Length: 135
Image (cartoon, rainbow, N blue to C red):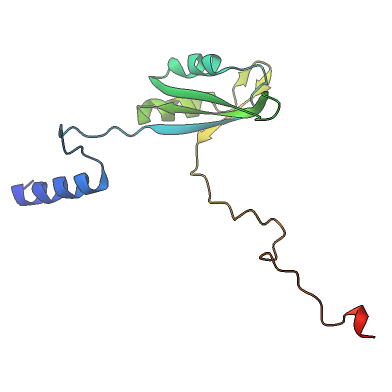
């Protein structure tokens, strides 16, 4: 690669946050994995153990209900090596864990939610054209 192209790439990578400006080491991105249909008895440590045989697990989190404190039946695992994560997804998708068949896939980014208005009418109350008070 010509030096001019390399310098442009380094500047672009620093701008995007891919390279650190201080130590010039590439930032390692990890793969986030979504696990569905989990048994309510599975803990973060259990999840970490299931995925650890495929590679290094950065984090493992079973999602809990904020009111009851019980598992909601799904979780997220973050693995630092993409190849290990892909292998774990292939082999664990459809596996039986604690009596339940789990689904394992790449986690999709969370979609933005609309504001607090759930009525779908932009906060305004509309009256129909034929009001009963007119007749």
